[in-house]
Image 1 (spheres, rainbow, N blue to C red):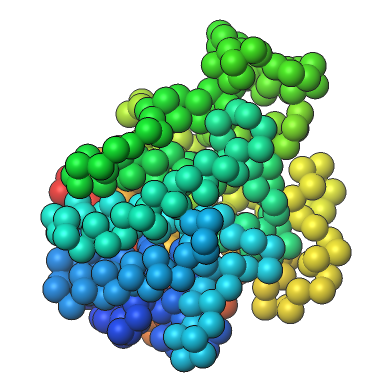
Image 2 (image 1 turned 135 degrees about the vertical axis):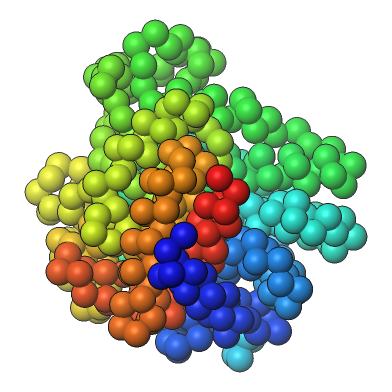
Length: 400
C-alpha cells in the first residue's frame, strides 16, 4: 500500500470518530445541514465503523441503528433524516426508499461482525417491517421495487424512476441481509433472496434466450414492454440498465448502482469483473463519477428535470460535470475500490484506492462531497460516508 493510502485510512477512522454522537453517525461534523442522522449516510457509516473493529465506533453503529429503528414509520419505512437537537425526523420531500434497505443491510453487517444476537433482536421487528414495506413498493407485479423520482441518494433534479437499478440492487442486498439475520436469530423468513436476485438479473440484463415467464408469470402484458425488452437484449452488454419505466429500458450506465449490484452478489464472478472493467474509465483521474458522461437535457432519457433544476439552490444544481451529473464522488470510489479488491485483484484495487485517497486529501484532507469536472473539490467537507467506504476498500485490499 502507498503512504497516501495508509494516511487516508488513519484520517478516515479519525473522521468517523468525529462524526460519532450518542444518537449515531452524522453525515458531516463540519456542515450544519449534514450534522444530523441521515438514514443512508449513517447506515453506510455503520459499515465502515464495523470494519474498523474499534469498540467505540461499533457502539456508535449500534446507537445509529437504535435511532433509525425507533423512528421508523408505522408501515416500516426508515426516515430520511433524524435531527436529535430538535427532536424532528422526516421522510424526504419526494419520499425516500433507499434508507429502508440500507438500514437492514447495516443490521445484517452488525450481526455478522459482532455476533451480538441479543442487541440485534431489538431491531428485528423493524427489519421485518422494513422488508415488508419494501415489498409493497412492487407496483408492477414484476417482483421489483418501483419508485418515484428523487427517492434515493440522487434526490435533486437529476433522477431515475420506475424500476431503478439502484433501489433494486439495495433491495436484493437487504433481503439477503434479512435472511442472514433471521437464520442467526432462529426467526421465520419468507422472501427468497436468490430468487429475487435472479429476477433482478433477468430484468436489468436483458437477453434473448430468456423465457418471458421469468419476468412475469404469464409473460409480457403489453407489447410495448416486450418490444422494449428484446431491443435492450444486446449481446455486447457491459453494464446493467439504469432503470425501466414501462416500455423504456434506459441504457445509461449508473455507476454506483452497478457497484451495488456487485456488492449484493448478484452477478457471477465473470460478469462482476466485466462490469468493473467497464467502469474503470469513470474512475480517472478521481474516483468515481456518477455516470461515464454527463446527462444532457436533450439526451432522451428524461432524467434531468429542467423545471426542478431551475428552482434548486445553485450548490445542488446538475450542470455537466457537477453534483450528480458526472461529478466524482469519493464515497462511490470507496465502494469501487472494495469491489475491485474482490474481483479484479490487488494491483487494480491499489491503484484505485490510491486515487480515492488523493480525492479525500483535496483541500488539506477535506474529504469533499464531490469533485467537479475541473478536479476541484465541491459541496460539503468531511463527508462521513467518504471515510466509511474508504475503510471498506482498505480492509478489502488487506484481504487480497
